[in-house]
Image 1 (cartoon, rainbow, N blue to C red):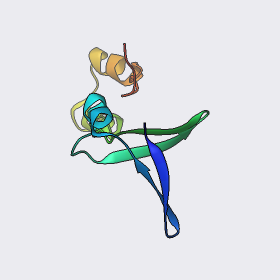
Image 2: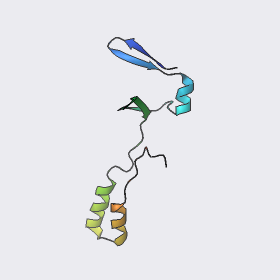
Image 3: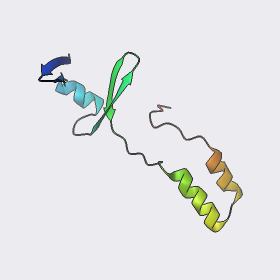
Image 4: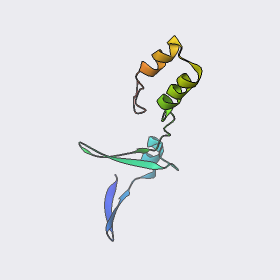
Amino acid sequence: MPFLNQIGDSIEVRIPEALIQQAGLANTELEFAVVEDGLLIKPVRSRVRQGWEKQIREAILAHGNEIVDAEWLDAPLLDEDFDG
């Protein structure tokens, strides 16, 4: 079971290797988020969609608008945390 340990002014979290492997966190950069019930630890995922809308709009300005362009710009981007 994970537990907290005081080290100077910091707190370390010790997580058993089996949990790290099961969660797919081995050798990855981690992201921490405060959630309603505690702290969420997850691997950092690349933000591959970051800047897409701006690039599409610039391409439309440079090359003209097509009907399909509006469909892509208006389509909702799913959150990377979406499991569906």
